[in-house]
Length: 261
Ligand SMILES: Cc1cc2nc3c(=O)[nH]c(=O)nc-3n(C[C@H](O)[C@H](O)[C@H](O)COP(=O)(O)OP(=O)(O)OC[C@H]3O[C@@H](n4cnc5c(N)ncnc54)[C@H](O)[C@@H]3O)c2cc1C
Image (cartoon, rainbow, N blue to C red; front, top):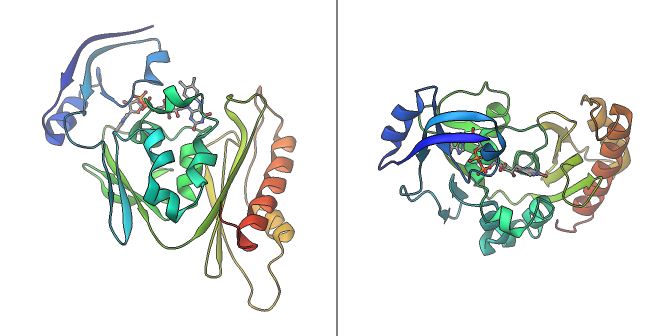
């Protein structure tokens, strides 16, 4: 069980960051994951007064505050126009609507969880994270950085007209994924992100050749050959590799065939 002595509702990011340098304090997202831990905490740092529960839309990007819920990401009309059905596919198996109304984008991305559908889906898009101290960092870099005491302020997705598809497989409907695959394409580049291997999502970029029609099967083989897979209670490494290749091919068939998400 988690014990928390008090919650401090901060009035600035600087106050939050300063409090977060104490090892016994924690930043609170939606508290959905953290509450499962067996730990004592002196102070939970609550960011909810900082206006970070907003999604700003500009012609170039979506700027998603860390306190936005996963459900907001799933339902946002402009995001859905840009990437039709993509986040609904990526997040729809995540426990249930009530849960996704609580879990935050910040808590989901900052933790860089090996099972994360959130990370897998964002990695195939042109995504940066804005850290209070660390500034703007591409998600491809952030995903491999060590956990520290910084604060994730928002994530920023560039609206670069890539088409994207998301697929995952679960042993039961709302379990963690056995494999999670996101495939996106822009101009002659395909971006393939594979998560739940069972390790943090990783991105493979492949260039489509001009002459031959893109062959999803051989692209899937190439992508899988660049990734490592492991075993856990949900699956063997071999089964994951097999599933990844099948789902990458299917994702590429969707996007290279012109079907959005
Ligand atoms: C039962 C269960 C099933 C799940 N299944 C899935 C699944 O299938 N797929 C999937 O992708 N995810 C799954 N998740 C994870 C979930 O989607 C969220 O990622 C998770 O709940 C974290 O979000 P939160 O808002 O609850 O964060 P919290 O629990 O509040 O925080 C998580 C961690 O992030 C830190 N943190 C929070 N916000 C910030 C910030 N802005 N800056 C810096 N640090 C911050 C906290 O201090 C804490 O260490 C599951 C979680 C649970 C509990």
